[in-house]
Image 1 (cartoon, rainbow, N blue to C red):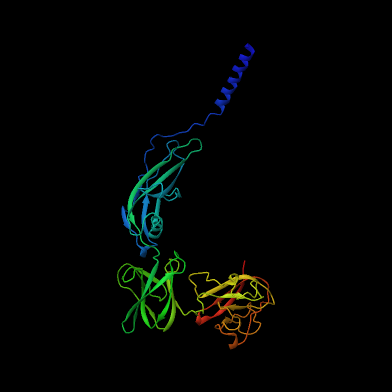
Image 2: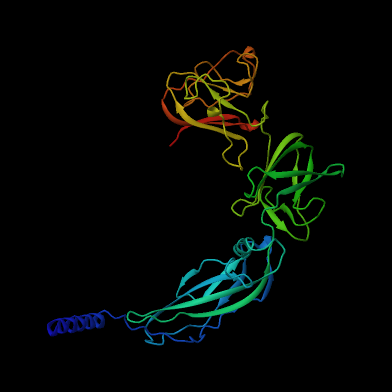
Length: 381
């Protein structure tokens, strides 16, 4: 019995030593970390302005924080924003700022943040929180935090529609609506009849502002909430398509005459010169408009077979009685001949087909700009 007792006591001693050797490292913490930073905002209330998207809307600055352990410790900062009344649901990630003690947001950047929290025009109280991290090799130091509040309201970045406001040479005013081919892109498109006129764009039907006017070069636009609007000028008559890109990278307006198809936006690849085969109007052969900025470009990407024949169906149901895009001449190689003429019936010029001289995956594009109709045939991944 005595032997067993000594064995137990020895085991306890060993465990005691092991526990002492593996105890948690010592941490340096403060129950109440003082605010040395005292973050301030450049304004306590602002209304964001789409016309100033690239300009600074608000700037935050703060004083330097210090290490309570070693004055040579590196101190870095990070900042985030959150809706004061709903911190857990509406917040940004922390912006890592290294040793910088300043952070600015443009009108566009701040609008994108609060636009997911509240509706355009609705005020929201926002808290900016800066946190410092002290980098000490031996001890953990509780981060210091400093906050400041401000109130902000945003704008609708991409309204569902915009409207062209036209004044003809007789002074008659008319409007037409432009919509987004792909919602949320800020690229608007509309096709309608025009006569010589002056025009600009408005964002509210029947309103005057906000508006997009001519920046002065006849292509790019300027966004206005008030003031004089410089007009664009049109000298053409007929059916035209307007493409308006309100994104900062472009912010332009183009007017084009695009060849209208018998069935809108419907073109199919057919023939044994491609993977579709001679199946009329197969979904696998459908051409696509790949970029909302370029509604005049229709492309099909797929496998082509050297020596085979292809032509383009326009959604009809008959091989001989419905219009097709035919090649400019018999056995045209799409790789080298990029001529394109308007679609027609077979009886009006013969059943002329393209014949690829290469096999593999290619992209076949049709440009339907009436002033510059042509094709492109390039390798594709």
